Image 1 (cartoon, rainbow, N blue to C red):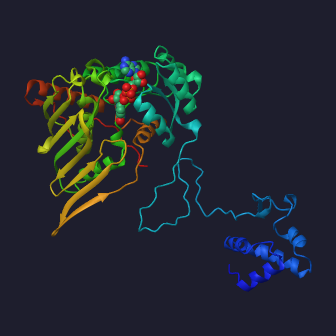
Image 2 (image 1 turned 90 degrees about the horizontal axis):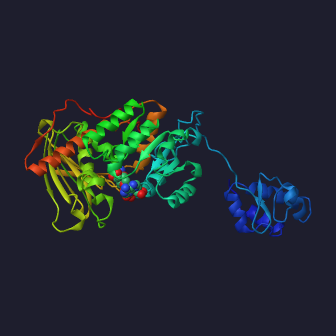
Image 3 (image 1 turned 90 degrees about the vertical axis):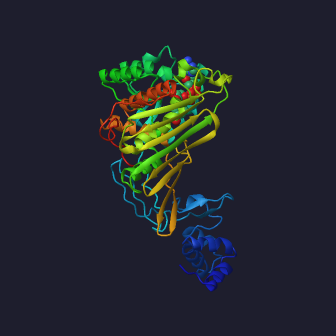
Length: 480
Ligand code: NAD
């Protein structure tokens, strides 16, 4: 719309400055000045002051609220009725099905990355209800906040040994006081129909017992990694869930994280030719010798099952095949109270079919460093912060003529914890098997036991040959 200065000046002159030039221009910019101008001019033409006559046709300052259309005006902070913004709904496709995204009017050019589909959260009463067992670092710092990004999962119950923590956390996340349980009352989860999944977030040695009791309570189980402290425990957990006809998933969040999934796709598609070897490292530091992570009975081991497991599991995930032999070297600094019971460092090598070698190191006594590099025949793929909660950085390198092409691939971040919980919820809602079932955790446990044996005996240890790819994994998670 174009309003000439002449018209504007005429209006302002006759309107006795009822509408300031600044206000007028702002209204004109919003497509509303026509109404103001028309109303004010109507007042001028009738020979009146413009004030009274304009009030009935057009909202201007001083117009009583009762006389104006509430839909087209609002009361300004000074009490005056002023024209309201023109609110419109641009064209959009709105499927009735809640699982289908609303398609909004597009505006971005394809020169920039396209935004993903609009989220499709299920209505809260249709989401799968989770009971979280153990209110420690992982639950409080990552899992409960991640429910805010879930579309199919919601927290409905808590289990803790601390009544104070239960009360506070339940209030923070809207969980009913009647859905808060002590460890003594754990088996009473059976009688809570809102709980469909029990998520075990306890020290490693407690996983087996709480998974087995949870399965007997008739609930599906999501269990933190490492699955347990021995192959035997893993087998008992799988058997208990089968017997109770409930699903069991191990929380391998990295397998649901978009950068790591993209690496997996590039490797499986031979993007840079066949993979030849992988270097992987997951290291961090710790300080408290009293923490369960430094007690053999509770943790099962040191750096290897806690963080080295990510190097092991992610290499298996990326390659899809299984190692046939391992060779480990373990060290703990003598006299360091942190490492009296568990290893400070494990360095190990895994041989995969086709001569592919994976070199890993994990350390409990260095500044944190979490990366891997897949070296393929014609290029490499490198992921920094590969096993971290955030900040994955994906780079590739290959040659094109005289140039070395080094690319950084940036894809939108996705909360890994929300992705893994929603995957499990989807398995329950759609009667599917999880992508990372108990068998996946059991295989890691077998390999870790072989690594410990090798480190103790100072020789390579063979593993049973496994034919095929993704033998221990369930169907692919849906792409968001
Ligand atoms: P944490 O020590 O912070 O919390 C453990 C919880 O277990 C606490 O609330 C504690 O009160 C409770 N608990 C019950 N009995 C206990 C006992 N006998 N000794 C000690 N604690 C006891 O540990 P965390 O870091 O939250 O780890 C919990 C589990 O989650 C572990 O299996 C760990 O490997 C796993 N984890 C996974 C990730 C991941 O990224 N997936 C990250 C961290 C931890």
